[in-house]
Image (cartoon, rainbow, N blue to C red; front, side, top):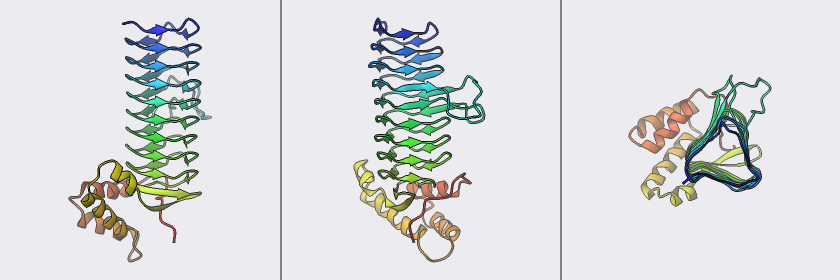
Length: 263
């Protein structure tokens, strides 16, 4: 079946629409936009240019996708926004394209829920099954791992990292990197343990959670230097995939310091 386009929608002749795309009243679709099969733009959605949405996405009214990045270095280069499949993007969310001095593309994975008024800035990498609650905001070049949860009114500073299965609490301000499986709260945010509730909901076994807790206690103990404790974790849990994910995350030479527990 062909795309269904409301008479009041404006679709650029350079846009590519797959089968069963639905474009509701008042939508504006610019050039170099590609919409995957069965994607639905409910009403008054604005997609500026150079944006790709995969299959089965639903975009709610007044969302703005593929706008120019809010970066003073941007001089009109043809950068992109690429969104995967089966995402839900709610009202007034804004997702920007990349910058030429960055990755030139902003990417969002599959099966994400981007709630109302959220912002995903230029050059970000958002994984699969990520939830961004109302008004959560991530700055330019931020990386958010699969299954991460960013609570309402939270913010992640540019170039920050949020690991897989991590949880950022409501109104938390992340100026540091949050380890995979970690839980951060406060403003400025501090590490408050592991996202145990989230891990249980996602089917992690008791043994997996036990090992993560033991590794966490070792990693953030008071004895020795932090680097020594990282290497101790790497030796003790060399065959543990989840613990080594934390170790590898910590070892990366990143732009931001690590989110740590309070003294």
